[in-house]
Image (tube, rainbow, N blue to C red):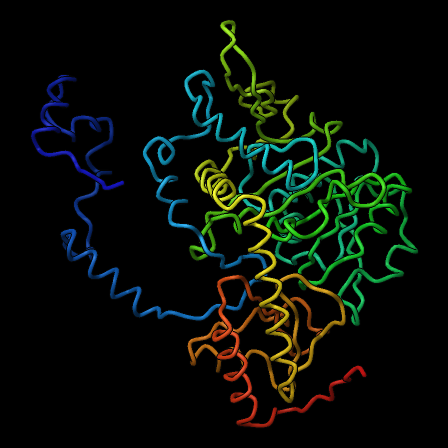
Length: 464
């Protein structure tokens, strides 16, 4: 929507209407000595054409890259209709509905979003979204501890995104909640088989399970879910919404299903945008609905029998007594949810499945090409979805730098969080990559690795 500034005549008319001589008079309560006398060092303003040209030049300077990073933010095709509709004035300027009767369009959209996400996760209810996936996971931890009414520890495997673990720890630690990290198996990239053997079950409220996990590999979710439930723990699922088109919904894990499911909705029509804004989703079983933060929209009939939408649950301190609130991190990412709802409605269940199939196929083809290169091996021997970990004989940071010089963002460097993996990268391929893209990446990688030996050659234990 274009920005149309007020003309001088508009400003004078508005000032005259309220009986004020100038805009400065609106701020006469600010002492004169505190008012700015101009902005030193700030250049003169540009006109629209000059600004457009400057921004175009800046964008060109950044360059255009072939992206294989993944690791929590994924490049998917977004149909043009998604943001053409999402940026209509009716959606673009709407905010979280406080007066439900005046926001039927927004409420209906949120209701449709909740219905789609409940179907995707296989759980009973979802809220109107949260800030992003990491804070949604933190809210799930708080929910689980409240529901457990005893233990104040939560089991979290190291296969959960390390940045998400940091966010959760920052949010819950001042509430006396601890995270107990569980090791992963260096061969499979999954939660270690014996990781739960010595767990003090009665001291923990929940087990977090990521599917796919941060390495892209698939966890044994049925066994883990049943084990947690047998010992009285809740299960929190961390899921990728695109992967759910192919993988089991968390509500069907094990005998009873996960209790809470969270994730980041960015793959559902949200551009990468340098890191945001994204949105977090949170779904749960009906029994936990009173512990859920945020808002829930319901569908009803008015006195004349007409369909209407209303805020059914508002567990926030703005609406109820502070002591009764579950959280104050409840402002939903309304515009992002609008785009995601339109995206899911456009592609439909079969379209989302096609996206997932294509992404998986591209990733599997890429790993085949890469492991044929001398000095590259897969880090794990476990099924994956659309990203995987590869290791190198050369330092991974040097490989990434060389790839970038060739116009390729080659992956996510794991060393800062997982030094035990050595020189390793997460590599991702979605449906946006063509066969030519995969070939280009593999050939460029082979050429880079063939140019110079590693500074400190490491022996790679290849499996038969």
